[in-house]
Length: 430
Image 1 (tube, helix red, strand yellow):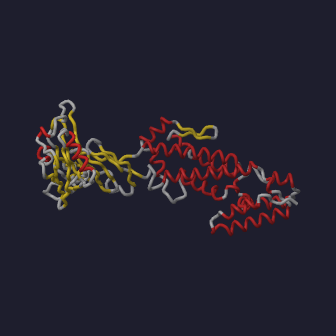
Image 2 (cartoon, helix red, strand yellow):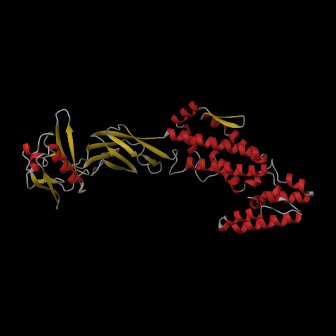
């Protein structure tokens, strides 16, 4: 009598199964091993083609289900969401514009516009343009120790620096900029240069846009010992800080909204960046490129599943091919035709179908949760195969090797077929 030489592998795989499935799987394994011992079955001689067919079926079914789930997912599917676009990205650019159609039911079809009345800006103090290479002492700077301060609301930050007789105007400007930037106080400083004129200026700016306190500057630069800030012009406010102002109109005039930044929310999960003053229209459209990609992936996964079904043979092959053939007219209108047992895509027709909304209608006619419609029937079939692929194998039966190594009578073969049907053989082998 020959026993199963893969016992350890079977037990190891069983130990990795979910706890709630182990008892049933163990019962199946126990029945199969008892049957194998009694009949003298050499399970190690199970045909490799059977194993390959089972794995191909499960892989094909799982990939097809994943593709179908992506197409019909409320959260991610381009068939379940609207893509929001701005009529002018120079005024308003959409950052997050994919929203569920169920959430947008109250706004799609209305005259959705956004009026940008004012951009958020940061305070900016541009200093005097000084000859970069001129000696600081000749420009009126005090040689030796100098001081200045920056005030932000109730906070004051003091700075000390030294000017030497050999320092140029640009040296002084850069030394002050370095001192400010090293403190990370919410105000930055930089030296800008006009190479043609040979001049440079010191510029102070708020790190962030928006107003801190209404009617008050976000910061002031105050002179101290030495009077360097007065010579540099660092206390001259050239751009006032202000908040963004905009209205979102959905068929009627919306309320005035303000924001400290130009990155704003337009409601319904839509975010955008304000870029200029003006008015734009929001269009709710299909993401046709993503729809085409999703549909193309589904067709590829279905081809792989059909190939695995052909390898299994019998009723599964007939069921899958019959389902595809029954819907061939609908698929053909989308540019997908059946040829030689495979689906082929006419890319130009598929593009036109997406532009005309035919892809969208094809997917959305299948309501989730109901077992009708082409996509739902495909998913239902793939789910059954994924749960127990071994029960669908008819072209390649394990009896072939078993009969070559063991003397079976018809009653024994019938018992084997029943085990295949309920998945006991698959559970024990895989």
